[in-house]
Length: 338
Image (cartoon, rainbow, N blue to C red; front, side):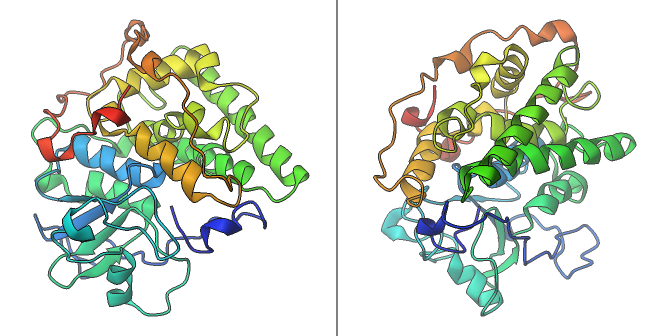
């Protein structure tokens, strides 16, 4: 999620998502000069941001917590970029910086597209390595395998990649990015087109998931992670704040059960901070919510209710196992949990 044009500009001009500018990859063969190494890099994320949450979930499912340390930014970023005000002294304790933009500036001056998360920073140099949110998680799944935990799932199985890529492309266009195109629309026609496409796609996804537990195959894949990060924010922010209100997620029996199933799976819900999510969207997007008032609802208790998706079979982690307990330093505070 980027702050590239200032938060007050949202909803005042046509919305177009910027492509990642820094697309270097961290790989096993170090093809871009960045080898996979434990403790060399720092993942900077916001629990408010769905794009960053993909990386947080993947990292946890794969057991990379100790190999790739996490920095969590303040959900209330400003026009200077994501801030480390959650840390003592307002500085990231490892990178020593107050704003993520400092790592960007060490890599390049005058870069386009603003400062976004997720971002991976090289700790020795303090330079940004990548902000390529589309490729980053795929590399965690396929390039960091030597550092995966025992029993880690295969989130991007080779035999299913074409189908996963197709599903993810549709989800990205109409759902992941579609909620933003609706929420930041500058005119009625733009809004209606985006909102209609969003709900058409959600209906198609509900049909796909009616008799299958996961989007591709019988295990959790990258496709499920990418859909989940939008669904988990749907009723809390997209339905009201972004006017995606033809119906709530909790009013769609299939998608609501699917989302709860994932939420209750270790590695998903234990990374979600509804407090960060709500405060970010409602307080940062001053162009569409100038008062900055954060609503009290919705009631979050439903996320813990039975989903009954087990009847569809499936093996969440394939032949592997669930991740262990959340590291104490990364537990979501009580106010952010259902």
